[in-house]
Length: 80
Image (tube, rainbow, N blue to C red; front, side, top):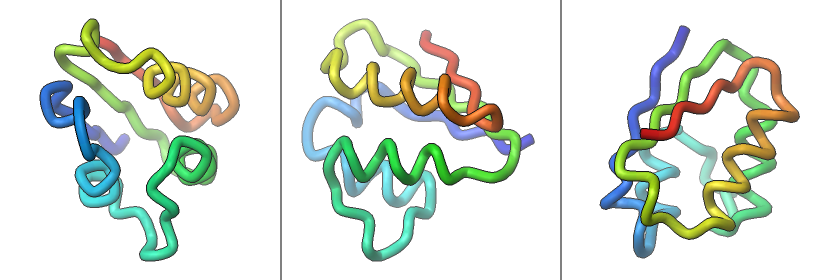
């Protein structure tokens, strides 16, 4: 299982570059929530995504992670 740990403090502004680096998204990653959802639902190996300090994050971002986790059985989400 692949574990990806995301620092919630880094997800408060200009977070798409951080996510691209952490997930090793392709160069064509569109740096928006639709593109994030698309990339997360394409993950093909068991992956646990842990986001710390998540209580202060934009609800749309959290919803994107939740929706992708619901859609893709390989993606599990843990909010701390």
